[in-house]
Length: 349
Ligand code: KG4
Ligand code: ZN
View 1: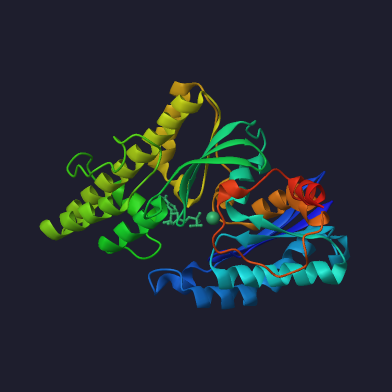
View 2: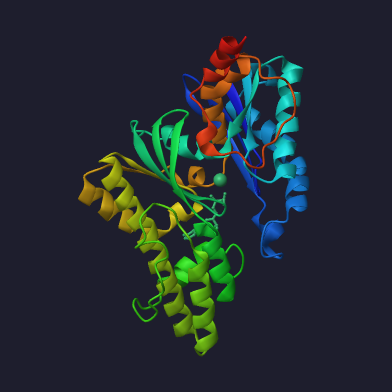
């Protein structure tokens, strides 16, 4: 079985070909980050149009790299949601059209399931059950993963995602979008402790997150202090330390509640060096393994969609209709293990 994976939920066009026996054969990614940089954030309509432009060339590139003709594709998987509706529809229409023209099955995949399962693309993948921390520009959640399609969201952000908080704070400090990596670099030059920002939700019970108050605290600090490079670096450091404390603190609490199990980290903020360092210490202390997908599979990509698609194709074979569908909102814990879609349909028949 060879599955073509298509990712177009936000501002990256990702394509990959995954072989059931040989693993990942090829993948390609196009990031629209420069397109949106001047606007300070993703412009949905521009994102959709750029997916239209880039998708077919990327599919050609991936098939050529894998030495696979279009007829060698046995199934197609695309990101059905959650994400920007126009961007999702580009991928959905392409995937359904391609699959229909080849007479192969097609399945819509949950974007976050793709992220959760991305560590399975690496050597020494984590065993179920594991705890997953998903931290990107659009999401911040802790998930108890007991198997494929068995996800319990333990906590999520009540307002901004962690990456969004990094980007907005970076903007306050005059850094260009997306400012997460630049803010992390600036924080590296800053002094710890000069700005002691709040650790939102850390002392409250539960595993939810909130970052908007932290952003406001940074805004006040910027306003109330002279604008010099050392102060900006100290503010960046204070902000990063607060976010890392909160993320690591909630992971520790979740591991205490669930019992020891591997910790999986995915999403763009997972690239943050200070967070990685802290989570390594936490995992060592708790005696659990720490798993990251390789950097290009931490962020949005087609490989995770192709892999999740391989597992989800039984659902397509069970008769999901050939309609172009996108789900801008789609709760992760509404998913069921693969195959149960067909089983439910049969049971209901
Ligand atoms: O997963 P991702 O590539 O895209 C989605 O949001 O789906 O995550 C991008 C986010 C951005 O907010 C970016 O600023 C943040 O990840 N990011 C970082 C770092 N690298 C990327 N945040 C903090 N430190 C970093 N080193
Ligand atoms: Zn993502």
